[in-house]
Image 1 (cartoon, one colour):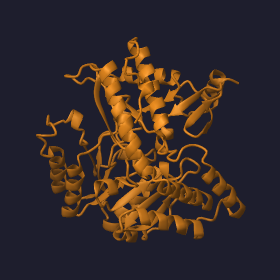
Image 2 (cartoon, rainbow, N blue to C red):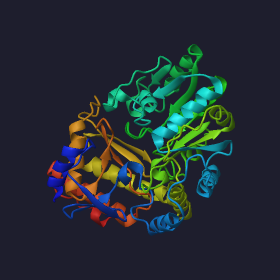
Image 3 (cartoon, one colour):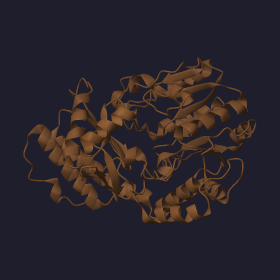
Image 4 (spheres, one colour):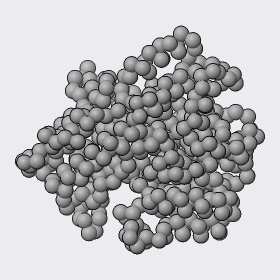
Length: 440
C-alpha cells in the first residue's frame, strides 16, 4: 500500500496523530523514508528524541548483545544495567543530586518528582508556566498549558498556579531587554509570599512546545534565589533540553543553575526504548522513600537501561553537545539571512540555543499578530522540498531540532531546501547569494 492508503487505514484503526501526509517506513543516518520511497532530511529528531541520529550501529549492536542476557527484569529486583545508568546520570548532573528514580518517560518522571515533593514537605502547590508542556498523564496535564495546546483540561488543584514565562518577544509588561527589571519574576515572588502551600516550581529551562522560549540567564538565577528564600523546590524539566540539545549535556550546566530535581526522557535513549528518569536531591529522595515503588512495570528494564547508557556515552564520546553549538550557530545564521531576504515583514523573531530553535511568524511586525497559517504552509511546503521540520503546539512558530550529529554539509543542504521552500511560497527567484553554495 502507498502513503495515502496506509494513512487512511491508520485512521480507521488508530487514534494516533496524523499531522503530515507521510507514512513512516524507516530511517537511517539523518534521513527519514516514507512508504512511497520519498526521503526527507530530518530537522526534527522525532521531536527531540533521536539525538544521535537514526539507526546507529553502536546502539543496535548493544541491543543485540543485551538481548542475549535479558530484556526485562522484575521491577523489584536491582540490575547491573540500572546501577550503571544511575552512575552515569549522576556523573553528568549537579553533585547535590544524589539519587535516580526510574520512569517510563518524561511525564512519568515529572509525576515521580511531584510524589517526592509531597513526601518531603507535604505541600501540594505547584507553580507552572503558561506555554509549557510536561506530559500527557493526569498530573503532568494539570501543570501544562492545556488551553493553548488544545489538551484535556483536567480539574486543576486550587494550589496550582500559572505564571507567564520570560517570553521577551511578547513581554506582557511591555519591556525590552535593555529596560527589563525581571518584572515577570516579581510576579512569582508575590505569589510565593502569598501562598504558603507551594512545594515546587516546575520549569522547562527553555520552553519547547510553546515556541523555544529562551530565558535571560539572570531570570533562572533569580528563580533559584527565590526558591531558596521561600523553601520551594526548583524542578528542571529537561525532557527536551537534556543530553546536549542546547549545546551542553544539561541546561543546568549551560545556565550554571543547580535545580533540586531534573526530569529526563526523549534524547535519553534516542528512541530505541521508552525510558525516563528523575534525578533528585537527598531531601526529595527521603520524601519519595516514604512510599512503595509506584513506577511503571516497564520502567528501566535492563534493555532500556543498556540502550540509554550506550546512547548517552555516544553523545559524550562524540562531543555532540559541542557539535550542537557549532552547527546551531551555522544554522541560525543561515536562517536569519534567509528569512530577512524572503519574508522580512512576516518573520517576527528567530531564536534558540544549540540545535533547538524557532522561527516565529507574524502578520505585522508592529502588531505582532501570529501568522499560524504561514507556519503550517511553510511546514508542508518544506516537506515537498524534502525537509522535515516541526512546529510549536499552537502553530505560532516553526521549530527545528536536527539530530545532534548533523554535519555542516547536511545543514547546508537543509538551508538550501529552506530557500527552495521560501521561493515556492514567495514566488521569488533565488538570490545571487544562493545558500546552495554556502560554507560554514
